[in-house]
Length: 128
Image 1 (cartoon, rainbow, N blue to C red):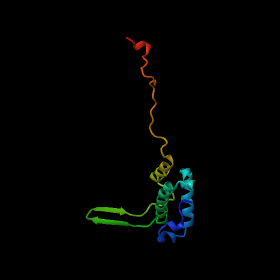
Image 2 (tube, rainbow, N blue to C red; image 1 turned 180 degrees about the horizontal axis):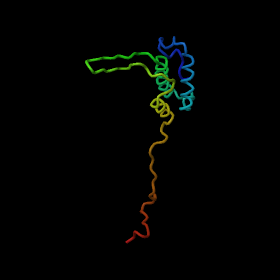
Image 3 (cartoon, rainbow, N blue to C red; image 1 turned 30 degrees about the horizontal axis):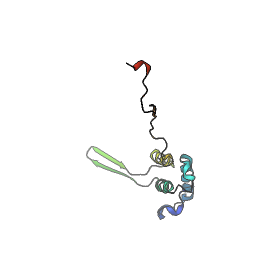
Image 4 (cartoon, rainbow, N blue to C red; image 1 turned 135 degrees about the horizontal axis):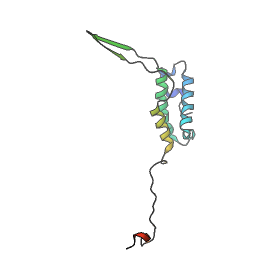
């Protein structure tokens, strides 16, 4: 387990679905970033714990907030501060979790195409 219920704020710990949310967040994180299952990967697991805690808190507070409407003559503006519902990790959270497993892999690389000898070899058509 990456995230435990005790890692969450007390207001979230009292949510009726907190055990389900924590279990689902851990399972989803391990599915998108399998390297987090390794116990010796402490730095990556600490960062993943922070991401998952934010996601579980967002899920627990889904629907909280309100709608504010302001009217001035014929004009009206509505501001919706309600949290989105749904129990999915955001794409940005998935990208960060996957990048924790990428490490140094997948970066740019070069291939040396020149011979290692002291005198460079010339192509037969380019000799003058």
